[in-house]
Length: 93
Length: 133
Image 1 (cartoon, rainbow over the protein chains, first blue to last red):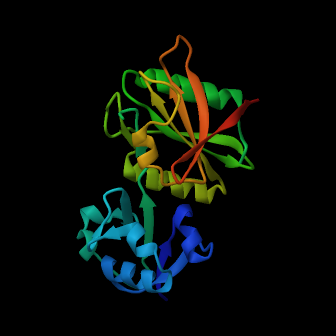
Image 2: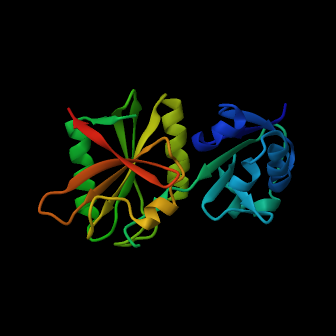
Image 3: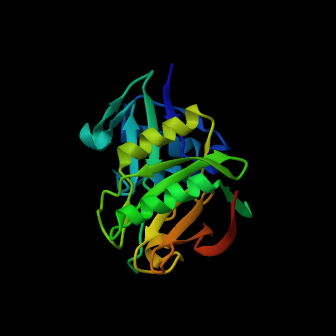
C-alpha cells in the first residue's frame, strides 16, 4: 500500500488525467520530488526552492501540513495527501 | 464550456450573499454537472477585505471533498467586486489556477447586482453566457 495522492483538476493534465496517483512515503518534499520524476513539471507547480508555494495547500488525511511540520511532515503508506491550490483574487489592481 | 446554467434560486442565493457581505468581497463555489449549477457553497473570505478575497482553505478542502462524494464538478468560482465592474482584475488574472472553472464576478456598483462569467486561460479572458432558469 502506497501513499494516495489526490491531484487537483488543473494538474491532472500532468498526470495523464489521473485524479489519484501513488506517492512515496517520507517527507512531503520527498513525495513532491518523486512525483516530479514521474510527472515532469508537477514539482514546480507545487513547490519552489524546497518550499510549498504560498497559494498551494497540502493536507495529510484531514490536516493542513502548515499545522503539522510543513514540508518536513512525514507521510506513510496508507496516508492520503491532498494538493489543493488556493482560490483567491479580488478587485485591487 | 460556452455557457453556465444557474437556476434562479441559486443565482438569488449568490447575489443575496454578495450583498450581505458588502462592503467586503464575498466568495464561493457553484458546483454541478453538465454546465448546470446544482449547489452553491458560500465560503468565508479570510481577508475580510473590500478589494481582495481568499477562501478559507479548510472550508475549501471540505467543499472539494463534498463535491467529490456527491459527484459534482466545480463549475464556477464566484466573488464580488463591491466597488468595481464585473470584469477580472489584474489580481484575479494573476491568481487564476482553476482554468476549467468559470470565474463569476458579481459587481455591486449598480443598484442591482450584475453577474458575469469568464473563462480565463493563460491570461486570456473570454466572457461566457450565464443562462438563468
